[in-house]
Length: 406
Image (cartoon, helix red, strand yellow):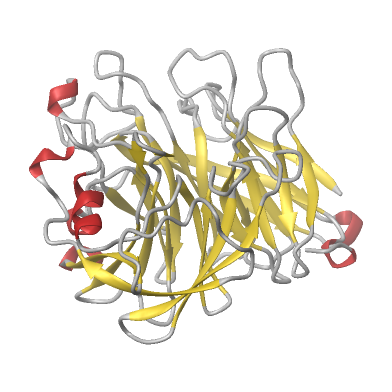
């Protein structure tokens, strides 16, 4: 296998004059461009306070917020041992948002970037945060930043779009602790106009049928299937969301919604949606679920994998389905960090290990395959504030995938 670094955070861009690449690389997706190159759209999970935040471009949503997205153009040429991957262009495509953690690609050619906070004016920012923003693949600079309020104001993590229906599934990154933290919800947004999210729609939360408030985070059996349905969220954009980040979650709970432990990664595949519970499971080391709809209002939730130990899989986060149907998982744990694979037989394999630089190991994020499946792109997150000690990085990895389990 061969791996190259394409881009670094808090460094001048190697291909775009005047651009200081922001740090905090996180979620990312790859798209085909008409010229045969690849478009990468990358989140920046910048967590600067309102007093220190500076937008990375203009127009911005909030002049005190330092998150957003950058877009890259990548050339992939040659085959086999002669394959080469190079960065062609790099620019800001969304500015003035906050803690852009994950998100997801859409079938209609855009990236949905999610804010992992509900901070706002009470925290010193000019605008309310906690929304999803859309960045078209064909953008050539910072887009007009429009919050998709009907999709909910909560601690967003990732999204995955069902290509058959246009329904957008959303994860929420909130902790579960017995007696102190109730957990997180799994949501879906049914747009009034598929592919046009700004036209509004209906927000719902998953519930386990016949078991109101069901806790998925403990006491589960790998391979077990739960019947589920969806309950409506009456107010997706509650006024109290800044003071109570779980305001949307509590609405779903009141209707019987299910509880998860820190839902993070999401990706469409196998006629449904894969989602990751980062510290779910009896070992607190992570779970992978798959939701498959069986009707317009119901479906099945299956526990695909539960980590028995942090040595096997430690706090999985971003997820992507490989071209051959395996799963690639980025870890966000407390010790050595890996990108690991989960093959179709349920076996965990190691792909990439973060080096120990003496300055802490970086969380992996943003794994995605090139449209032709030949190259895996991924990020090392680095510091999430200006002037941080660790530079973020985007990498490309390729080789004879057909000889391996993924």
